[in-house]
Structures are given as C-alpha cells and as structure tokens.
Length: 164
Length: 158
Image 1: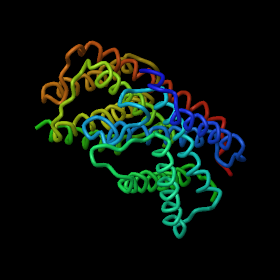
Image 2: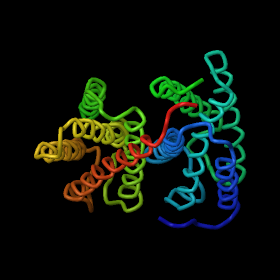
Image 3: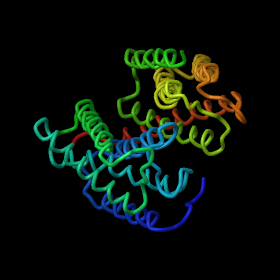
C-alpha cells in the first residue's frame, strides 16, 4: 500500500471533504444513540468498500479510485469520508421524520445528491470510469444502497423502540 | 459446479442464521458482519491483487463463488459462531469445539475454492488461512464486546 501516486487535486479534495464532513458530523446536534451513530458510520464505510472492491475492482473493474488501481492511503480516506454519508442519510431521515409518503422523494433526493457528488469527484480526479462505465450506471448503485439503508434503519427503529 | 456448491452453501448458512436463536442484538449482529466484511474485503484485495499471493479466476461464473465466499459466507459463519458461543452457559470445552468447528468450516471453504479453481494459491498456503481465520474470530468476538459495551450505556429513547 502506498500513500498516493502524486499529491494533487484529488488528494486535496478528499482532505477538504473529510474536514467538512467530520466537522459537520461533530457540529450537528446529536439525534441518534451512540451505538446507532457508530453502526451507520460503519455502514457507510462498508457500503463504499463493498462496491469499490466488487464493481470498481477485481473482474469487473469499472472504475479506478484516485491515481491508480493500486491500493492507496487516499482510497482508505475516501472510504472514511463515505462513512459520514451513511450517518447523514439516517440522521436527516430521523430529523425530517421520513415516513412511507416521504420515503421515495427522500431516496431520490439523496440519489441526486450522490450523482452531483460523483460528478464533482470525477472532475477532481477521485473517480475514473473505465471499461464502458458511465455516470448514469451509478443511479442503480445509489438506489440500492440508499433504499436498503432506509429500510434497515426502519427495522432498527422498530426493534430498538426508537421514537418517530 | 463451483458456483452451484457455493450458492447452495451461501443459501444454507443464510437459512441457518435466520432460524437460530440470536443472543446478539440486531445492532451487534450487523456491526460484527460489517466489520468482518470490511476486513475480509481489504485482506483479500491486499493478498490477491497487491501481493499476488493468490490468483483469482478470470472466468465470470467462477468469480461469483469468490464474491459469495468473501462477502457473505465468511462474515455469516462468524455471526453464527458468535451467536452459538454466547448461548453457552460459561466458557468451557464446548467453546473450543465450536471455534475448531467454525475455523474448520472456513478452511473447508478455502479448500473448495482451490478445488473448483476459483482461487489458485501461488505464494499462499492454507496454514496462513488458518492464522487469518483465527484472528478474524478474535476480532469478531471483541467487536461484539465493544458494541455491547456501547449499547449498555445507551438508553434508546429519543
């Protein structure tokens, strides 16, 4: 594992985003218990890891993260950044009191945010598509991840008797 | 053939996990699963793709068992192991038997993967697998302990 191939705009972008995301995480008033907060940070980290190492590497290898196909520390920082998105998804789910009626617009809204973020990531050199992959394919990834996250959070709320 | 065998085993372990009594809470089960998933994926990538100690098949249908084993079977076996372990009254020889059984199943899956040419060990041995699986068992156990500690301090009322 190397630190990075070249320290340039993608590394700077990841570091800035990390500061912004974790500052927001600490500043926002806590609305979720500690164990659920930690669980969804791990959820975000593992979702990005699972997809990157399944469709973004190995046999499919549809995209390259950061400077090379080799494992860089910057890649790890990217997954640490994604951890906060798992948390923000359920945080605002709780704050905005998402219910059955609001579920679909909420997931579609996050999918739109995901597409914008991915476009920016592409500009900043964090993601590089290859082997015929194009941005709209990520819609499937976002819809699957966010729908399962929302449904799983609903299950957790019911099991742990979390208030609405 | 490898695909069918691994699919059957994945289904079987999913079914076993669904029907067993689970002393771990849903949060603890999920946390252990995800931590093991992250570690297993990263370890597999470093050993296979970075160090090239193991060659993974380039044949699509044979690659699916690799994914099932890495992302579903391994974490799930550890969850089943932990849920059985915590049902034991106290630490006893049964815990040792359970650990041996769990590690043996994982090793068996590694043998199956090499048998069906899903993976080919070049600079890797099943002895290293054994060490890795034992470490995974320890990590799974301490992840559970860590989450139990956090959950015990939390009152789930918002």
